[in-house]
Image (tube, rainbow, N blue to C red; front, side, top):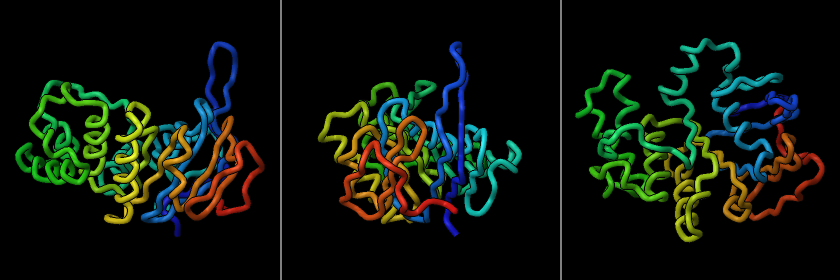
Length: 246
């Protein structure tokens, strides 16, 4: 059984001019520990795909399953627990601190709702910061972080709960190329080291070519799916015959 399954998912938004289709009949499955790339240009639907997969937004049509459970059938409280207890984490590069405290406290914060004291939560927070390569920032004010440090701290905040599925939106969009390469190397290593499934959405195709599963999306439609690293996607093109949910 796949960890994440999307079956014929659609999503629309409304603005002053009418309806905007963000996802059209999208089907996808992601296995434990898999590294998946989602490639698309701006407004292609890739961010909406991640948000629907994370149960942050409900689909207008189709079904989303996590570990065999239908997310639409869950209550808000059950979906919150899914995020809290070894479930799903969604990370975006534009994370900003909400108060002026040391970085380690920002990373520890998600654990406080589990009943841990701040002192108890700092232990796992330090481990997560070490894993993402920013342990030296632990006692810096969060406002002093560079763009590269900020996305790594955001990843640490997600990893501190030990999720099974990590969804990352445009992780290197604010970074210079050299730092972007290092960040993608870190993200690829997470699945290998801890069996967390990692799904990355990006406008850049080159960093995604080593993905085990890679898809292109355009105007809300999956245009191609390829399996195996090093393959270049036809884009835009016809729907791929590779692994889609059935």
